[in-house]
Length: 213
Image (cartoon, rainbow, N blue to C red; front, top):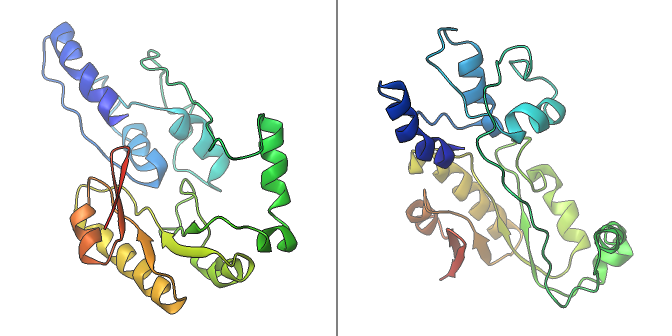
């Protein structure tokens, strides 16, 4: 959403004949930014780049959100359409979506989990955000008891412009890995990779590339 807004802003500024400022307000899967507009002055000078998360997924995902996605906004225009593509490793037996779902469900049983042979990283949702994937910290030990070939952990802190804000999440993940005898730590992106490296990351994702130490 931030990228789309910054692409749109110069043209919008030209059309309106006045400055257009893009302000990024991340957090809670977009809820914080959307709520700030919902509660802002209704003077027509404040717009929000809404998306499927803020206006469709989050109202169903979170027990309570601080705005009404329909009543609190006047929808102006469709700006961007983004396709989603489902891809798999070519060695995975599934060839259709239904076959993939059946495979995922089969791994839910303890016996199937114990047959898992691919070394894996477990994603831990340390922020507790509903929009984040991964298991909760309290579920980690039970999960590791099922999967014998887990080699490490990964996490994704809340998005922020302050890289240091990610440090507590990286430090906690490192502690969990040491406690459970795991060596690999995948954490950090282009926004906070230096902090992740300080806290012991063995893998860092920059853009679409995953770098290993």
